[in-house]
Image (cartoon, rainbow, N blue to C red; front, side, top):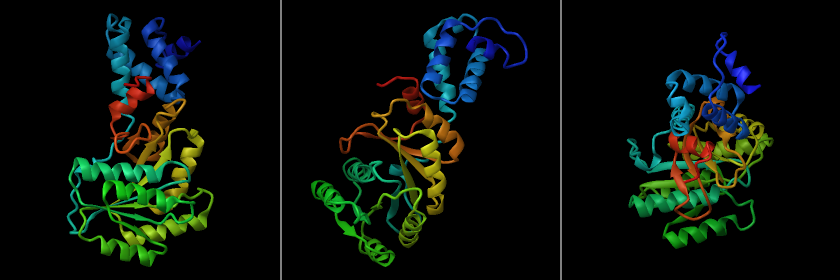
Length: 282
C-alpha cells in the first residue's frame, strides 16, 4: 500500500518500489517522521539514484541521510562566537520544567572553560525548585566558576555587571509551564535585563510533537532564537525533531546525549541528527 501511494506521487505510474527504498521509508514512518517529509525524501532519493544504486542499501541510506539533514537549520557554533560589543558573551537558557537546563548549563560551562580556555561566570534565577541553586553551585565549585543568584531583573543586571571580567556568562532560568503566561513574562523581564547575545530554548526529545510545538509557540514571548534538544538518548523516536525543526523556524544549537558533564553535549549537526533519526546510534 505504501508503494502504491508513492507511485502516485508524481501523477504517473512508477515501477514497484525497490526493497532498500521501501525499508528506509518504513523506518522513517516508524520513527514518527511526518508522512509528507518521508514522501518527499523517498521521491527525491528515487529520482537521484540509478536503478543499480537503488538496490544498494548503503547507498540508499546515505542518500536519505543527506537529504534528511537538509531539513535541519543549524545555528553558528556558540563555542566559536566572539561578541563585538565589548561585553562578555552572554547566553541564556530558557524552557519548561524538567528538560535539563541546569545540567546543560553545566555542560556548556565546562566545555567553554576546559576545551576553549574561557573565563566563565554563571547566573541562576531558579530559586523555585528545591536545591536548584545548590545543584548549580556544586557544578560551579567542581569546575571552579563564580556563581551569582538573581532574584529580580535588577539583581540580574547587577550580576551581569559583576561578571564583566568574564569571557562568557551563562544564565540558568527557572523552568516554567508553557501555560503560565505570568511566569513567562517574568522570564522575559529577566532576559531583557541580561540582554543576552543568544537565547536558547531547551526542549526534551522525549516530548510529543504537539507538546514541543506548543512550548515553542508559548516561549516566543521570550524571543528565543535557538533550540537545544536534550535527552536524545532517552527518546523512543527522534523523527518528531525533524518535524519540529521544519515547522518552528528556529536553528538547532546543541543536542545532549546523556547526563555526563561535560561529555554528553554536541554542537548541532544536521548529519548527526539525521543519523540519529535513521537509527545510527554511533
